[in-house]
Length: 122
Image (cartoon, rainbow, N blue to C red; front, side, top):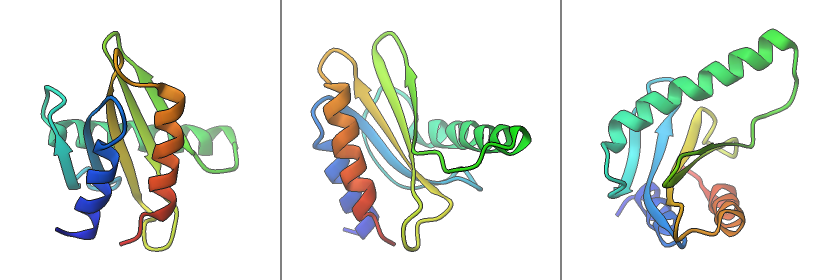
């Protein structure tokens, strides 16, 4: 199992997690993915790379400095968390985590997501 697949496995152990991917922001390609959120994670990875790039462009246009920590998208049955990685060797990557809203604890999931993100290395 590759190192990135190991991180995805850790993410899928978060209570309520139904899907996870580590994504290259520039290409939109999922470098590792797992779970079954009920939709195509490859397509979602590509689409969410557009979300990340759009937010970064908007911040630049507005002159907002700093880094994006995470982006939360709340759906009626799911939470979608996007965590931008900026550690050694991970610039340009993000974690995409899909949670079942009925079974996940959002605060705890964000805490565990940050812990995995902090240790993610390529």
